[in-house]
Amino acid sequence: MKKDIHPEYHTIKVVMTDGSTFETRSTYGEEGATLNLDIDPTSHPAWTGGPQRLSDKGRVSKFNQKFGQFGLKK
Picture (tube, rainbow, N blue to C red):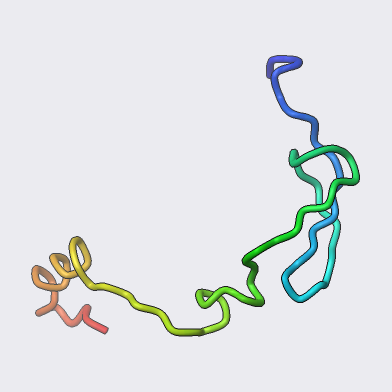
């Protein structure tokens, strides 16, 4: 590994949207910096099961058309 080309890896504080905090190691900011999240697992629909729109277009539908007769459909 080359020397002096990688960013400094240090501890930061992460504040989630509900106000809870935790410490982690990151290359973000300086040692002891605070990262305030706008979206996190407590507020994003992908994690909370909120309304989602999934489109079955493209490769998935092509696959199902081609191999659907083999019982691989949902």
